[in-house]
Length: 152
Image (tube, rainbow, N blue to C red; front, side, top):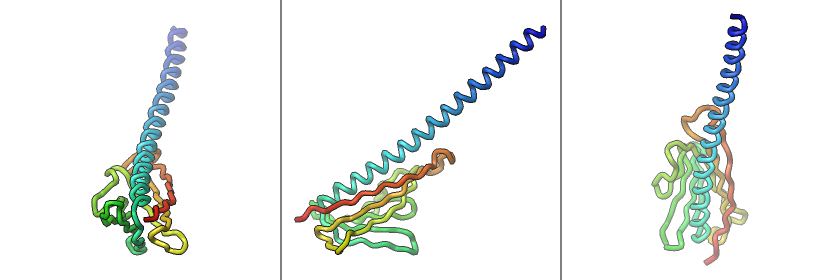
């Protein structure tokens, strides 16, 4: 009887330990997946803007400190005027939202020294995190890229 009780106790301790390890593994996997997804979105958005800025002409940039939004105006290689804006946790292009609903993004645009807009440089910075995720998956990260517009 005692041997059975000791064996069941050891078995219970082993099962609880293995279950704890498994739960930790699943939580770590969810966190990695959430962060990887947010990084993918950030890299895609930065690449999308970089290509369009590089091939276009920089018209102007502005920052609204009261609302926390920042904007960049360019003319694309096709002659289309485009406005990118960071604000309210989203990035827009001509008013169309580019960010998925589960991503929180903020950022700013800076024009390089000399403010030579036609052949100037723009630095775009982004802070990205997931919305509504567990605290473990809400890790924020920053992206920054300096883009030189090609001269006409």
